[in-house]
Amino acid sequence: MKKTLYEFYNYFPFLKEVIKRDFKKKYYKSILGVAWSMLSPLLMMIVMTIVFSTLFNRTIPHYPIYLFTGNLIFAFVFEGATHCMGCIVGNAGLINKMNIPNYFFCISSIIQSFITLLLSFIPYFIVCVITGVPLNAYMLILPLDFALVFVFTLGLGMFLCAYATFLRDLNYLFQVIRRAWMYITPIFYPIDIVPEPFRFLWDLNPVYIYIKIARDLAIDATLPSEKMLIVGTCYSLLMLGLGIVTFKEKEDRFFLYL
Image (cartoon, rainbow, N blue to C red; front, side, top):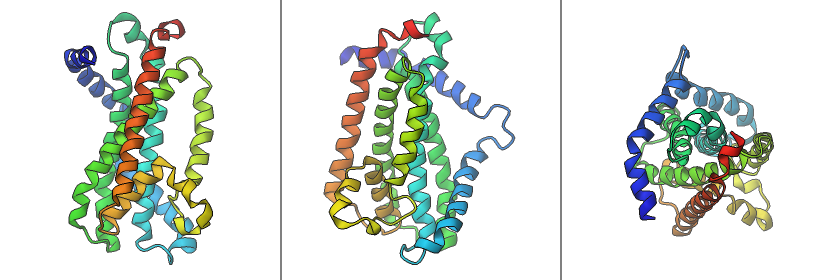
């Protein structure tokens, strides 16, 4: 543990340079640049609201924000994990030339997606004002939820990256899993339509837990239950632990596949 902390501290300037490089690379030759990170989720929210509002608008208060909240968190988790899967192969040149911690590239990939998430909350709050969702003091606790989502996504990304470096087709399989996961997460539909005997299966979904916490704070202006916070924290720590252990176990063989 001490060795890892010393390594992180020693190479931290390099991590900052990787983050800067990836940020510039992400928006290279982009006309809208950073603005697209705010416009993209906003446009997606508008389209999905038009499509699903006739079905659920009357049963879900503040449906545009309900949808916006779920879509932002879900997109961060899966886009972050997807980018992380290819970060070792994508940085093969640096890894083969320099003795650097490989997990830095995973951290940088997740941070890029996290920056997009944070930028997306600028139009999010604007939509809150336009649609009449009152800004409340509980929204100040949203960073806690973001921290839990970040830790969970980092662990998931490291876990997938460890295997995707060897199994290049894993990325295609993960896109199928992502699509299925989207439908079992109440992003655009209310949890009430799920029959009560099967609702516990939805409660096992970590992404739904993080979305529910954000909705409680932003829309309902209430504190999430202690149970939900404990479960969400456990999911984050367990996923991070699994990701680190798996990544460290596979790391010594990365160079054979680069």
